[in-house]
Image (cartoon, rainbow, N blue to C red; front, side, top):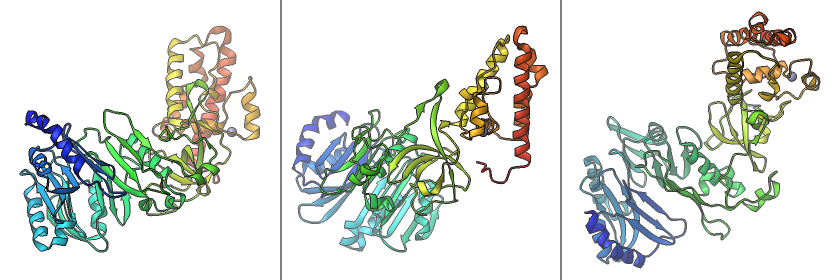
Length: 493
Ligand SMILES: [Zn+2]
């Protein structure tokens, strides 16, 4: 079949070139297993390795437009929707589409021509699918969260395990995308999705946030009104092949972010003028607008970030899942200023999203490393130091954490006779330990017990070094006490 397909490639390309392109903001990006692809955009069509049946349809000369396409895991599992030159809408289903889906298609097609026109079938990997016609839908094997989102706004009948049928209470389904890794997107008037946090792969999160960034500022409140189309390749092993399109804005060329593995991300995103004028980092970097991280290299090679503490629990717009969900008192890492007082931030659970400035308190912290990275470096260095022994100088602890900007502490930290770390910095550094418990802190403290530490010191420097170890031992005692009797005003993350 492969040989026959390649023999037809030239003719199929010629046939695709004669079709009428889709209208503005209309897209269909369909990925199949292997090299099979079918793309329809307002600029025309492209395809590789199409099933023979589809090639024959295209070569038949009766098709005006291809409205929709999708491919399942099996070579004979595919579904295409055509607008014919006669004006009717026709479907072409592969022999291997699931039986329940086949009956749904037949059922819908029998109701009316309107239903036939509205029918869309989206096949995923491993026999998963969603099909819908207006408000009526059927699904099998889709991510639990996506099903939950559909279920929440529908009357539902569960048919079998993992197979469901439903009808939206209001509105119709416009678009759906998902991957077996759990990432998903649903557009039914508004859009709901989990594209800004796990389990969505990091590269997809960043691409999606980059897309949000370029939307008109009014749409920051309601991004769904700006998204034209989202596709995720369900057959990619990683879930990192995708295509995101923004609706045409102000007559500009369509904006998009897409990645077809193994190639790099390709994007055409324009920052809106309003954002550019208020951004603290106003350089309009059109080519690399996906470069979202702005950490600077600090001492000891650790990357340094600005941190903020959440003033509230929740997010300012409850339904906007691109906003980071916050817990009051939680510390978040600022990754980038996005303009208009919005930041891209990351919480301790590695979830990323947008946070408005008014929700954050920047307190007395200066930019500093992620405690998890800082602690890992600190721990490895100290273990090595003690293994080698013969210590001649006390480690410079400010290299690992130097976050406290309190005036008194800054003076103390600069005094070479003293430790280069204050109790606030030690607390911040120890937040990076996996499990912040009394036992963990006790184990860390014991490394600095002066009697024990003295054994690792060079005899010439032993006295002065054990004195510093003693001071650190005491400082650990203070944060242990803080854990048992937390001071009221200090927010704990
Ligand atoms: Zn301090």
